Image (tube, rainbow, N blue to C red; front, side, top):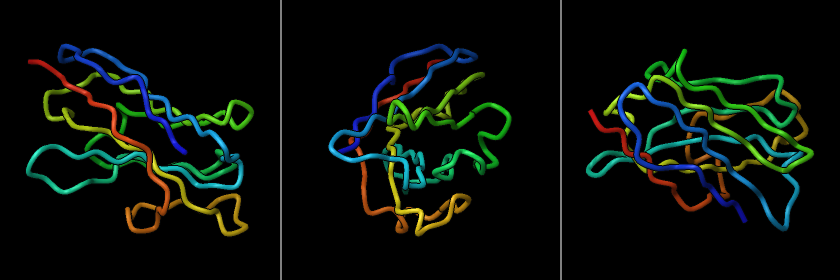
Length: 126
């Protein structure tokens, strides 16, 4: 089970750090991703990280502002968000996918992820 937390209301230019903790399963063999969805829009890719942490990818819309990281010892994945903009307002979801034996593989497509946490709402006011 994945549990996302850390969302909230922040002013434009502010920062938040989202966390995704796993229970009942180790994340060490899973690539992880963050996605977001706002009302009336499709779920979109935000960032992904390999199980080793050695490979990451972020969407162009958040590149340079959002950073994904993980602490396998704590079974937790993070999304550090800075310089937040009103258009970042959305429900943010974390997801897990088997690494299929690769320490480097990451996934951008949501249909690659069979395991999802509940969303945590991020609201950025202008």
